[in-house]
Image (cartoon, rainbow, N blue to C red; front, side, top):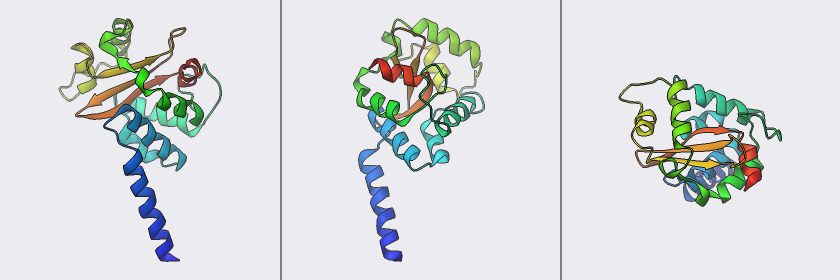
Length: 168
């Protein structure tokens, strides 16, 4: 019996490494999906870039713990929406090339005043946002933001991610 459990654990860990790799946006989203399915909420923290004392980490994980179908819920989450966003990973675009760059920059700099040299996201945002990617619902303020930090992708924010997924 013990060997079977060990074999299952090894198989699960192998499949996570095989199919989930945060060196791509799709891999990041797949990794989050696997952890959500396993209800391993603490492990999801490494997939989220922490802003201002992990405000956004707690906010996102709080939404994940209470799945919903309500589109307008800011930190609303459901697995079907995540899978749809994951399947459309090629639709993410650099924030720098988005017409929403100035609006996003203004909102985040106003909300997160972390000027620490360690604040990679804020520094990148101030300096052209070349490593920040956005998936936007064109009909609303809904969006998903992902940051490439040291060759790893991390989720920064999703606002009404169910509404974003519905548009895809």
